[in-house]
Length: 445
Image 1 (tube, rainbow, N blue to C red):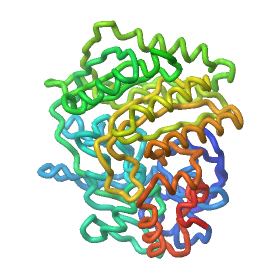
Image 2: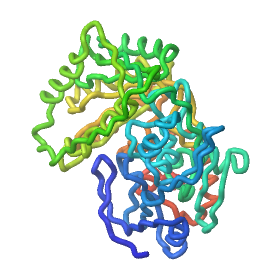
Image 3: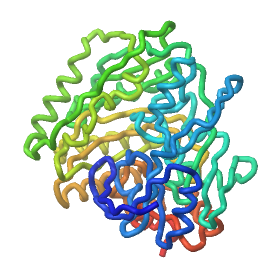
């Protein structure tokens, strides 16, 4: 098996890094990549993390998308065993018709099983089911020593907790067991209603925490003044009956949008249109599961909308007790900067994840995209980082490309534990990424 030198980026299309890439098709080939190379190594799934987390400049990248086999399924317990390169989309496509569904899914089905574990991803139902790691029963991990070890929360509690949300730094996730949930149908009954401002939005989300299985808010990040935080709230529960299976062909964005097409005026107009597509009295609809869970997957290559320079995403979580003030500061800063961002996403999270570097904690999470311009974009991200820190929040590593090492260390209180695990299982630092070096994840030096 030969390496191929590739130019790679995250979903935000920046930064770009060159690395020697291997694409193993068997677990034995994956092990050979580790034992026959000497530079730093990083596993990479479908490249759906946004920034530099899945980049390893000048090192080796193991592309895992061909390690995508189903291994077993227990219809009594719902436990699925699969290789790490399988996409969440393919799992859903195979099991939803059989009455099972992934209990947790992020906003794209193109993420892989290994990536979902490495980022301990969350979905629109975190208040009720937690994050992805809450449903992982075991992980088969290729360690820096070359050993392949199956770990569980009982057999290796520290290593298991370090691997959940550990950004791929404890080793290569080869396969895993995850418990699926019963799905009474393949559809959701969705309620949409307009919300006029941030205070009303937070109150509506708090109510939805108790009354709906799923909830997500789409906010106009360009709104100001009395309209700050306006948008559309979606709540959902399973529909009682299924819809006919859909075989839709996703549309593609055929080219990079020119930079001038994305400006404050065009984004403001789009956001107003999105808000007003929902009647003043609200509406209900029944929709196929993938339309609700993965709305952007219906438009392939949508990252081209932000142009050749790419974009950065900011996602933070602010604890309940400081969320009202923190979110107001964040949205006012973004609106004042007139940073063109399509609809922001606002959700609630229910509690801490099981991983040492898991992102979720109980609070409100806000996510926005910003087209990359110049140093002003970096300055904006730094200001948003400071506001997040001042309100006791943290930034999501799966979306990050601009967080400072100092801010990271302050946001993640279990970083010391994580470093201790890395010193034990990978003392030579074989597993690394551009993000791990930028954030000094392995050590403060």
